[in-house]
Length: 108
Image 1: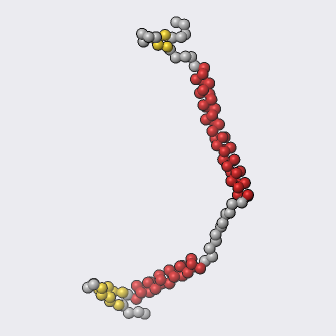
Image 2: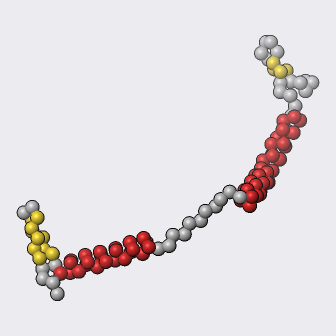
């Protein structure tokens, strides 16, 4: 095959074997083939233009999202409403007179 080469750069000697040269050539060929496959392949581009159909789809998706949020928040709304009812039904807190003692409003 090829013979070995000795390359001297800046006072250093490097031995380049025939296997090194072969592997470099194979790597370059594979790189060029891969680049050519990517460069010359057909490019597929999808363009979405604004139309009445896309407007209708976005409107329906917005409506569905709002409905799902309302459904998801129902348990929270119920819990808040129950807490508000409990707060309205609670007995009033004890009052303080001017001397600092508390008087209960339960008639003691």
